[in-house]
Image (cartoon, rainbow, N blue to C red; front, side, top):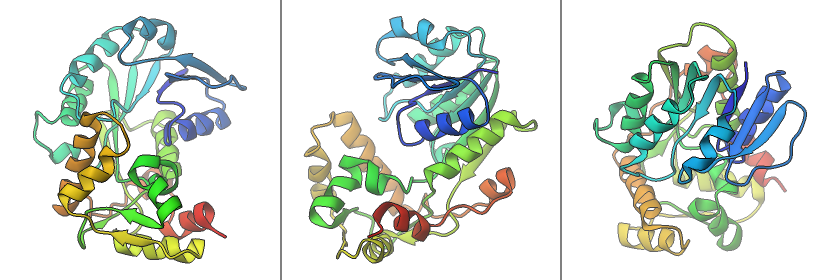
Length: 280
């Protein structure tokens, strides 16, 4: 088996690459800015918006790990279908979307991606992780920069709770479904062990860092302005604002035991993550 990993330098992708390499599984690590080769890992250039990169990036991979575009792009379903059609050697697809996608409107972009994969004629498994803990220290324009520079956790969430999941748990679950039988045609929702408010997250990060990190419960106008300061495209800003609408609707509040059932291990806690990422 050779696994092609989309977004191989991202928060989840690079950990999936590392976990597969440790398990001795050859990887084609695809990204717009591929890194350096390492034992078992072949970096390849891939750009969703440049189809001339697709064939060379896919190579002879027989298994694909896909996460899709980081915005609510109405054309993403067509792009996914074209990519899968251009990968005749690939017999299996593991798709990472997000918690709640299976309950979203059927024309929602990520719901469309799931349907494309299910109808691709290839064996498939879908992973739906909740919000990632590592966003707090790695995603500059969602949380990390404001936390680092202003001691502010910017999230217009009210008192709604989210069962944040560690990216390492997502990687471990991915390796499980790739290397063990019985997961074809299945979907798994990956969460942490508890659901907490963003105010509680700020308290945990404060204790770990020794800094007075506070939750800024911004209204919609202020929250949009915060994201717009990133300079990223309007589609990304719209995507982030939509996610917080879902937060306020309680979409991300459930806690599941899917990770434990897949791996036999308990999910990592927010406190453990915070001590590692923010510890003094």
